[in-house]
Image (tube, rainbow over all chains, first blue to last red; front, side, top):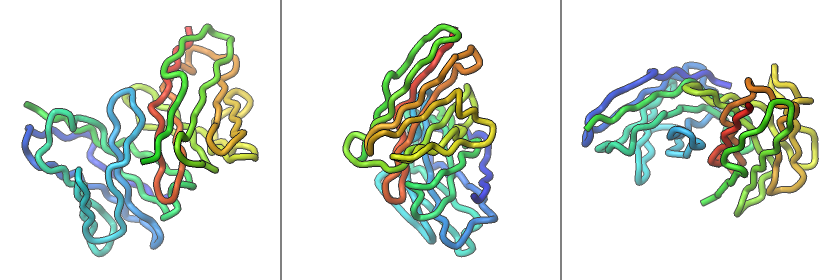
Length: 112
Length: 113
């Protein structure tokens, strides 16, 4: 399982765009990159997943450079409700059936 | 979307007793479920992989006789904490896999007094 490295914490003002970068130098060819969000006392919630280049959905964008050794989760115009811990995970396409390892995550604090 | 539920959401038990936590996939069949434990201000730690119809696979350092896992059907896995101690107090989260994604339950807060 590829190890991931993220900043421990980040602060941002409401309305700003937030970019959280994750390093995964040992990512394997078959690995996908998945980001989860977790609020206190709740289970993690899927945000976005990608393999290469750029992926966008209704809540976030994921940027993956050509070497795939890092990825950046972009949250547009954050609000106070985006205050949470964000986890970057790396795993195979059949990730639903394989165990994943959570790193420490990035605690995002959105400031009014 | 896929939904995973857990029951109970929180439970308080006395030291030495056993407590069972249920994890259900509500709208899909899950051949594989995972159990995690999360202590305050820490990340999720995988405890075991639960496979329908077979024995669970436990992570290193997790006592299989203390944390009993039963995956009797394609929609239900249970975690029983036996002879609970105060240090077992934690947030227990399950997830169920489908395709490329894991869907997480809301978690169960266990407090052992």
